[in-house]
Length: 345
Ligand SMILES: [Fe+2]
Image 1 (cartoon, helix red, strand yellow):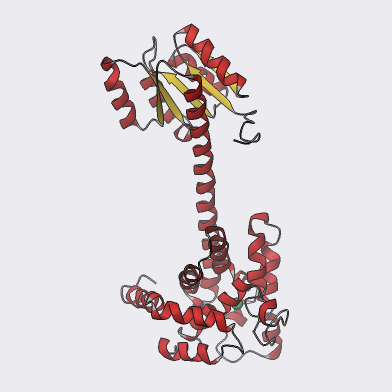
Image 2 (cartoon, protein in one colour):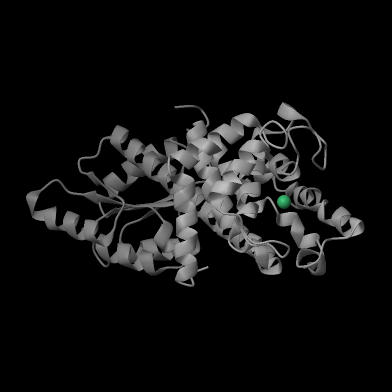
């Protein structure tokens, strides 16, 4: 355990116990760990304390006068924010109390410490529960963040009807590629954001350019070709998305250096951007566009292979070919067909 793990200052625990000697012992052990410890001798007093200052964790006896631990647990869960607070029961070690345990468990309490309590167990259980609560919160924030970003990305799709559901498919292809490449979870997650956001800069491109049926004029192309820079600029201030900026900025670079905006050549192009370039083009080829109808996937695959070493990184093309052969690409395409037939898209 590092010193940082032991730094609990700022975290408030609420300890509820009617046995005053035990209450003091619990208080002292936890305070020595660096927690701010508030105490109460029954449920009602605990609720008052809760309303005064919401604790980060509650440790409560079950049998107590005025309001017992189970009633307290139910009352806390009804309080604003109460559902997310880790709640640990202190249970007596006697067969007569077994039903308390089961009742508590069916209510969804997080843990139990059986009396007599060892200070070692107390420290471990409290620490583990707080860490778990932290992990859950980070996870929930990430999920909420991805959902907001997807909604944002869908806004582009609404402006550009020809890329309908493009973001969703790109993400599926990207994850299959990352899987084949053996990338770790952090890298896969960053790639997921890259896939969701790669065309986010199109929000700054006028809608008449995005949905134009005729060929774009050179001036219009000039604006269209700036969407990677617009997109990178939009997210560069979000620290969490820092690894995603190069993916957005360089997803239209070409292996031979003739792409944009940097004209980067070969391995100068970030790996994730080389990956996105392959699947972005494949999806564009296999989707109807204003100026042409969709290519059959087999033809598009041949086209991608032809452009290996010219437009695309040959290694990424080989990986794409592997996920094709494993059946991942055809099944994503098949799913799209089914969705379309069922009007899900
Ligand atoms: Fe793009």
